[in-house]
Length: 359
Image (cartoon, rainbow, N blue to C red; front, side):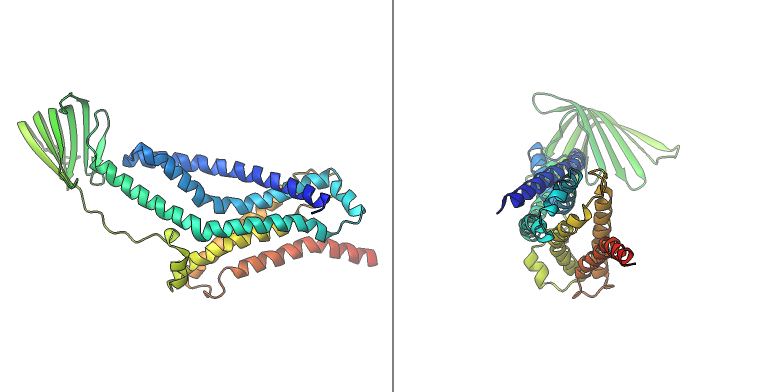
């Protein structure tokens, strides 16, 4: 590889890594907040939070890499055009093929990695994340009541809170809210004992020295029952076998399936690597600057191209699932349409200049 090729490849590679890293940090900030909120609501064990964040990174990386490559190429060539390095290279006889060579090499490497990520690694990460959330949810439901923390059972139908816990495990100053249809029960007890059955599905709370308040919210009729001992059984519902999400299905299963939902997911996984190489090829002519233009003058146009591209691909995915677009056509029309639009937009000024010159 010649010196100019290595120089262009280095500039594009550093810009791509920097932009992808920034975009990934921004995306992860929202993902970390969502994971922590879900962990707090569903009482996940602390050990699974970092694992879920890592799996979320693998799931979001295929979305970040194509736009990172587009902006990286535009920023790198924007600097080269702004500082007249590309003008000097062209004056020395460097053609468009030489300029495209390092960009194409990097785009092919990114596309190969992205294909492995979308077709193999990301589905396995999604499957592992769903399984880990289910295990964490069941583990949180089966654990004992901790003092100083509100604990909900059965989707919020029963809420328990204990202020303190004695050394022998007896809970002190206990609050229980339970809904039975329209009737709401609020129970206060001085002491309570929490026991869990062997299978973890039945929680028994034995209350001592308390009072139970029953009534319909908004009504003036209510009843107060004082007791020395009361047993409150809470049975957890059986986990319904949910349908496996399409994001977690292996690519081989999608290839063998004829369901529109699965075929749309398959075309989406194929489209992401194609988007990377298509955007990289469009970024080179898109980054060309006129004299005295800012090096960031074409960034907004690159962002606009990406949003148009991604929205068309997302719409095409929905259309395949609903049968609007034939399955054999897939999302290939999106790539072709973007290349044609890009060629027209970027070729029109040259054609107009040649016509003016001939005139």
